[in-house]
Amino acid sequence: MSAGRSRYDQAAKTQRITKFLVAARESAIDLNLKRFVFLRVLVSSWLTLPFCALVAGPTPAQTQERADILISGGTVVTMDSSRRIIDKGMVAIRGDRIIAVGPASELAGRFQAAQEISAANQIVLPGLVNTHNHAPMVLFRGIADDMALMDWLEKFIFPAEARNVSPEFVQAGTDLACLEMIRSGTTTYADMYYFEDKVAETTNQAGVRGVLGQTILGFPSPDSRNPEEALKYTERFIQRWRGSSLIVPAVAPHAPYTNSPETLRACKGLADKYGVPMIIHVSETRDEVRQIKAKYKTTSTQWLEKLGVLGPNVIFNHGVWLTEQDLGIIRRRGLGVTHNPESNMKLASGSAPVLRMLALGIPVGLGTDGAASNNDLDMFEAMSTAARLQKLVSGNPAALPAEKVVELATLGGARVLGLHKEIGSLETGKKADLITISTEPAHAVPMYNVYSHLVYALKGADVRLSVINGKIAMLDGVVLTLDEGKIKQKARIIQERVLSSLKSR
Image (cartoon, rainbow, N blue to C red; front, side, top):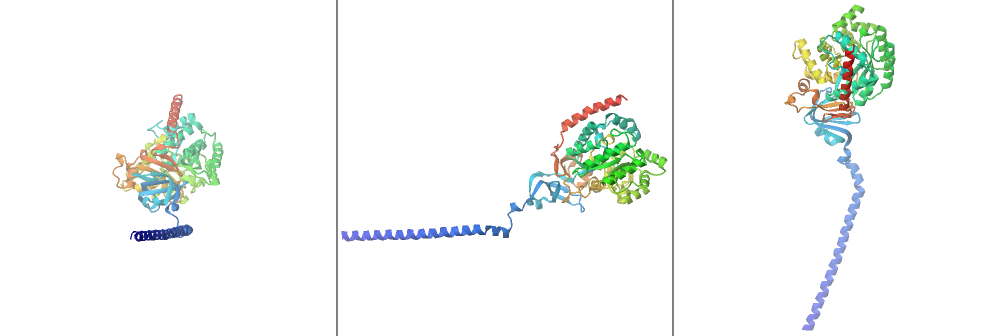
């Protein structure tokens, strides 16, 4: 029994080992088969991936367009033809152009930007366009106030200019003016002064857009002994700056009463030759009206029309005392007019017929005039003053509503300067000139109507961001393109020189 049992146990053990080996072999075969199938599927997937990607399209990361700057989250006031206002909007910028404007919710995933800027609790607006300025005259700010224009000019301004204006003075003054304009939301301005080539250099370095006119007078000026010399200087100035991305050179005869008919014709000829604007003061005061009437038996506008110097490239500054016949000529010739309410009021020059000009379809823009007769370059003040003045003189509280005033300070001003196809509204393809204005200050809370806020509540000091030609000029209230401390220090040094020069008269 014992030997038989032993043989039985040995046979059972051998059978169990055999089954184990068979099962292990089958498992190995099954494992290898599974590995083979897995590898085959994997290789197949790799081979078909490009085709699948082609059919399905690129991944989300691949669809994003490149942008340099994204500004999002603010109330975007486009000033486009439909006057779109986009709550929590976005503006995308590439290079010097706007490449998209719309709700942030729609555009956020479309762009990958190098720099993203939050405009939460801010208004995003086209950069303001100051259509009339004498930028370096910020250095004469407050030099003489509370007097008539001719007294102000002949007793203070002309003597101060004769003793002080130089290339150095002009550079320092333009630096200060650009600093003030960037801080208060102006991205484009029109100028008329001396040594305008230096104005252009300084404005360009500050990153500000300018339509800059070289002044021409019928008597000696700080940069020219006579009008012939001034015209030669102006031609060189135009030749240098034509084609600049920021600077539009212009010819700027001071006024009909300070230039001869021959000089005025030569100015228009020069402007036409190079296809640039001609800027001129017209019908600013009663004194001018009387002088022109006594000398030429007509109005300034009609005299210029008789000389053949009017056309769509001509910009009239002020136009306070334009007659109905004058307005007909302006409309027919396609001129633009700059309205400077603060300066006109301060000098008691009068109030331009803005409502009538607009009714006739004449392009009108807002300006500050020079700081010597304003006394600042804040376009928010110009907007507020313009709206209130027209209500007062017309006796109609509905005259010149806030939305129209914002248009005059943006797209309307651009139209006067001949730049409306490039700036003045936030639209795809236009130049990237824009600002943001905080709605956080106490005087800005609450906000029911954005146009009302821009004209009647907000201030230049509320501007937080300035982008000009696609470049950031100011971020979070800090100007990046200018040295503020050095500019102010230089201005104070020049102030002492000016005071000393006037004492020695």
